[in-house]
Image 1 (cartoon, rainbow, N blue to C red):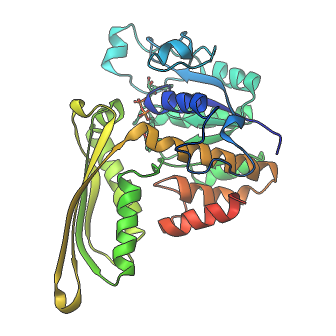
Image 2: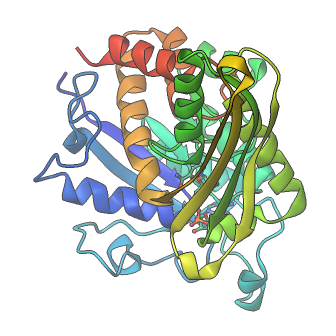
Image 3: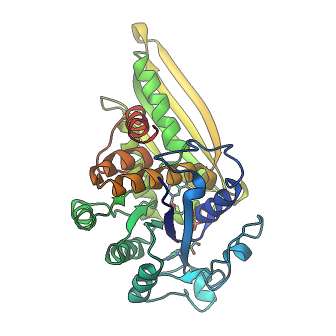
Length: 338
Ligand SMILES: NC(=O)c1ccc[n+]([C@@H]2O[C@H](COP(=O)([O-])OP(=O)(O)OC[C@H]3O[C@@H](n4cnc5c(N)ncnc54)[C@H](O)[C@@H]3O)[C@@H](O)[C@H]2O)c1
């Protein structure tokens, strides 16, 4: 397929800047890619055409100057985005968020004409996320929601579908993060005929997003999404809790997931597991984003919009149709890797 995939990004934080570094790095390598070629596209077919943020220390600057720890060839200037939620204390100290009107963002999206708007704004910015989805729809581009805000509903899906577009979400599931690993373990234990009785996953992270997730309402929502996502693997009720437990600045962009599980085997014998997994949040999300948009681009070109369910089940913790992790990968690879 000769096409390119044009993307615009809302929220130039840790994940977006890692994505930009990846697009630069993968011009000359394929090491670390989950699917170097997918749906007929390589990584070099993905082009970033626009970036929005509201942080006054980023808006108006070149991407290459904000990503100061890596050499990227990009002259893109970070544009002001939509701001519909209360902003952080640090922005207030810098005279508030640098934002643009909804109409301005729609018209800039129309000018750039990207295939996708990728929502990577801070956790908890629900109203802004909703407006970005609306702006994408109005401008005629598909929408990918990495945040935990609920954006994919029957209503939004049919609005996007009626324009030949896709809306994908919600809440990105990292390639090998706390949730994916937990689900994989559960699946294996069940396949070995062991009965899971109790389990927990406690996540501790040191990045800005973890800090934002500490707000009680958001922490509760994330806990619900993660716990429900894990329960998909287990065909009976059991005592389970999974959530972001603490912000520890000294971890930087790392996240440590602590798992504990108690299960029963032959004659009620106890099997207990206690382990931890340390990963890097932002790199962990990028393969999944790049795979999903390549799959979605092919499906949209073929007017096969129903494939959004396969893509969302593969890429998100809270898709509208949840399936077991192994089945989601199988369905995704069967549909897009030949
Ligand atoms: N693997 C992962 O990293 C992962 C997994 C699941 C979900 N997510 C979600 O992806 C999103 C991005 O994660 P991150 O670690 O890059 O977050 P981050 O906090 O590092 O970056 C968020 C960026 O969004 C900007 N922003 C805030 N409100 C905005 C608005 N209204 N318009 C435009 N920009 C705005 C902030 O200024 C910041 O630059 C988060 O919502 C996170 O929960 C990430």
